[in-house]
Length: 164
Picture 1 (spheres, rainbow, N blue to C red):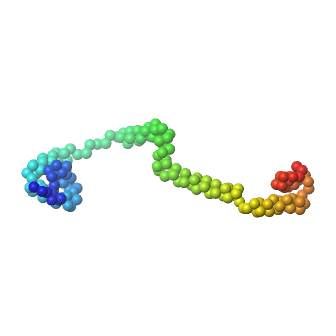
Picture 2: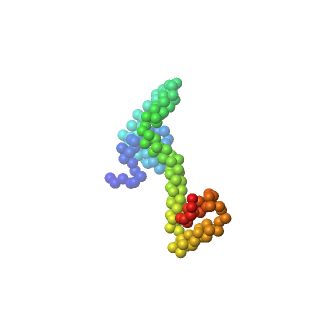
Picture 3: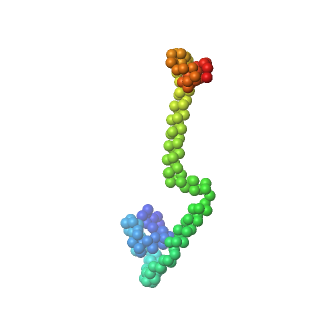
């Protein structure tokens, strides 16, 4: 006998009986379960067994939580965190995004600075560099600074000559 896609096998029915009793099945699965249960005495018997257990289990109530449970959970979590190797703690920080933001910012700043420094070190043509040297020489010769001043020493350092 060929089954339609909406029909259910007993094995699938058995895994969903508890959800069926609790009303947790989606509408389509609920219809499929009802259709299967209408035609399968075996699955109806299992459903009756589970339904018979519901009342005694409900009467047991919820067990009381131990008073120190929260403390034990927090202590264990703290131990696991601090006992973990530093490498795994670093990974946890990165996973949370704090480290990723810092690394991305550092990379952007590094690329920006690298680009600016590289541009300045290769800046201009040979004729432009020659003009800059000429300007330094002219400014040094036109300077009214006395020979022993700091300005004279700095200017002498720029054009490679002069007395310090």
